[in-house]
Length: 273
Image (cartoon, rainbow, N blue to C red; front, side):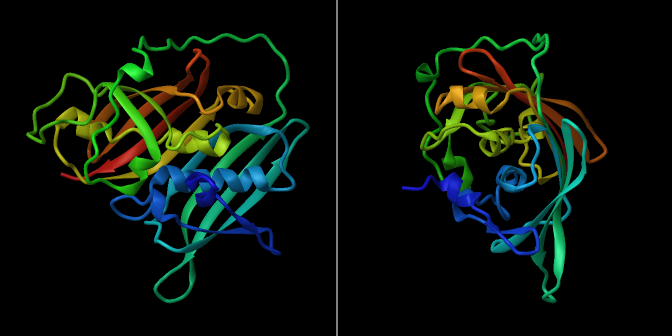
C-alpha cells in the first residue's frame, strides 16, 4: 500500500518540462495544505528532474498566495549548471477564479555533487529522553496533517491554556517521525522541517493568526545518510529569534537518533494581532 506521503508528492512529468500534481486531503491544514507538504512537492520536482546534478544542499520556498485544494503544476528549471553545483528556480501554479494560471509558490534550490572533505559539527544535540518514554499527542480534533506525524513533545509543547501568559522562551523539543513510519528521503526531510507549531503561540499562549512567508531547509546529509536513518525517530528542536511588527522568524534543527545533524531550517512568519 502506498504511503500517504508518497501519494501526496506523486508528480506526473509533462511534455513542457513541468510536473503535474494534486493537493492531498491527508495533509490538509486549517486553510489549504500543510506548508511542509507544498515545499516537499517542490523538492520532489527537483529530485525527479532528469537534468538534476547531485543532491540537495539548500532550498528556500516562498508562499506567494494561499494554495487551494486541487491540481497544480510545478515548473522546475535549472537556471545554471556548473561543474559540481546546480541552481534551480521553481514555481507552483494553479488556476485562479478567472481560469488563468497564477503563481502560488516560488522556490530556489541548490544541488551539488559532494566530495570527501574534513568535517565537524558545532551544533549541540539536545539531551532527550528515549522516544518510547514520551507519550504521543492525545487524540483530539485537529488538522489532518498532524496525524501524518508521530510527534513526542518532551519540552515546549503546545500551550495547555490559551490565556495569554507569556513563556520565558519559545523553545520546543520533540521526537518525530512519519506516521505510519516511512524511510527518510529529501522530500520527507523537507516536510519534517516544518512540523513545529508557530513560535508565537508558544511565546504568548494566544491563538494568533499566522502565515509562513518564507521557508528554508539546509541539508547536512546525503542520500546514504538519510537511508541509514531508515524509518527511525528524528530529534527536533525549534526556537524563535525576534517577534516584531507583525513578523517573526524561527529556526530549527533535526538530528538522527544516533546524533547526526541532518538538516537545519529557518522561516519567516507573518502574525496578526
